[in-house]
Amino acid sequence: MKTKLLGKSPDELVAAVSACGLKPFVGRQLADWLYAKKAVDWSRMGNISKAAKARLQQDFELGTAPPVGSAVSSDGTAKYLFKAGDGRYIESVVIPDEDRKTLCVSSQAGCRMGCKFCMTGRQGWHGNLDTAEILNQFVSIPEASELTNAVFMGMGEPLDNYDSVSRAIEILTAPDGFGWSPKRITLSTIGVLPVLKRFMDEHRCHLAVSLHNPFPEERLSMMPGQKAWPLEEVVKLIRQYDFSGQRRVSFEYTMFAGWNDDKRHADALIRLLGGLECRVNLIRFHKIPDFPYECAPALRMEEFKNRLNNHGVVCTIRASRGEDILAACGMLAGQR
Ligand code: SF4
Image (cartoon, rainbow, N blue to C red; front, side):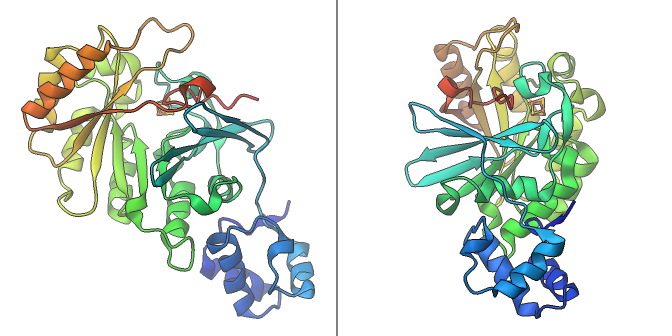
């Protein structure tokens, strides 16, 4: 199998072309085509000579691949299906919102975290995406040049595939890569502790933590990851970082009727997060098959939100997008 060029840093592209006996500037041209111009095939790379392309194609492939399926929601949200490795499929979602276009990126085919309310978790883990497969979601969609933000909130736990995700973030934020500011990127995790510390130290992107229940036993009943990485420890770690500047931390809280939506939960959240510069996002639960809970009623969510806000914890209810095409939170299954 040939090595993929997508997923190599600009410096690695220079090294790769040099190893082929080509001039180093061809590596810079490649980085410009792949990352700045989002060129997904050789024919667009007009300033690279035919001979240089032919030499590179002996050893390398670009690593780009178009989506194999797509669907568009009545609210404008678009979902793309990609083939990732042998018989595996992953999905990405583009969410347009006023002047923004946010890509919800997948980092794994399936997920081994096993959260019970999540369609991705239910299918188990089928493999990690490499950096090229992660970046391909940015460059091979029709909206490639219009994306303003990205959230690592698609299929998979990004901190369970940290090396590939971290490399993708490096290329996204490198001035001679995509050139994105880290504040355009948010990584969402259930709190994979030792790796979370690495992410916090090595990158300056925003963080979102899937919280969903402040009580350890209750959280554990739906999120097996709570056992290895207790929420209290996660919050303790997060409190060591500064969120008064550009970096933000948010806590995702999907609301289930009768499981995590009463005053007891709101008050425990206020105790857990009090004094931390953060935001709690309440998310409507989207019904999935064979799962006993319903979404909390709208009034209940409003009361919950107000209780948090009245006690100094900033809280908003996040608009649901793409539910009709199974693209909303917790619904991605990577199915053809
Ligand atoms: Fe994995 Fe996230 Fe789904 Fe949990 S919610 S199973 S971490 S994809």
